[in-house]
Image (tube, rainbow, N blue to C red):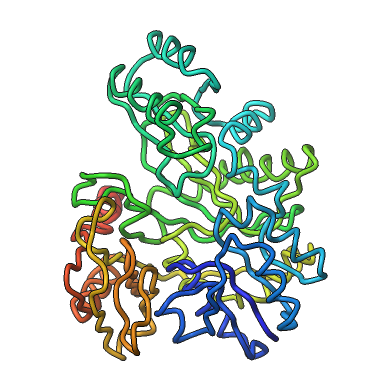
Length: 424
């Protein structure tokens, strides 16, 4: 089989490494991929949002199956365009991808179908939004309605910060058209849990839970990033919580999307907060999370391609989705200064003994050398019998990888370890 994977980050590298395990896969193309992904797939310099060229490439190269992973191409309808040429895909169509493409849509969906989430209001007028803030408690959450590379959410500690957030989105257009509408919602308190789930629109098969670390610096300080590391499973996601989520969130969401005529097929990401009132949805993503994928897929014991094809063909119920009982930890190695300004072009040295554990996100091939080209450069994952050992092993591997200006958090997984200790 010839497989096409759209995207070029650490998440795509993890997907490609998992797909390679299937003996029927003879060739994987990555569009655009990156210098690190080039070790595992043929990278072609076509952008993930270039719908016409993607379809043209897929047809010309007789692609048997395509995996569309990033949010932008999903929201733009790349799956629809490939399906029109009879190329089967993993990923939701444009109509279903709106669950991430518009926060206003997803909040209204939850309200309409009684899916637990934070209370909220939606505004298309800046003055009305600011007027509303005068009546609210703080902290409060201000969200740009559209896609914003995971950065369109601001937690405002007081009225002035909230007003600045609204103005930056609606007047200054820091997130472009994504800030034409804003969602202002209640600030929820509790541990966060990420749960990715396979669904074919009929059944939902959740993957192992995970915990992301969004802040740039240790002790959850510094700016929000696309994720500085993850662990799985998440100790806060007990069997009891999982049962509640399945009954009150996962299945109702799939049913709601069907009712709206927007059947969702692919990977649906549930960003959850375990509050005193039970689990609530913070956000939906219409795809694999990054860097959650880098700890979830290494724990998958079932064949990824088989599961994906079952999703596409709406026969997920027939396929076993099995995960290991082990633990995984992923530490992101970034360029110092990320997510603000940082240098590029530094040579990366990855010893062969850790290559299998590395998922490259921001690197390019320069004359046969792998050099940094992004903020988050790579993720290093370890899978072990328990979380403590997985964390130690991940950091041991990190020590073996070098590039100038490298930066990483030193406390990935410590909050989870503490939670495990408290439980015992």
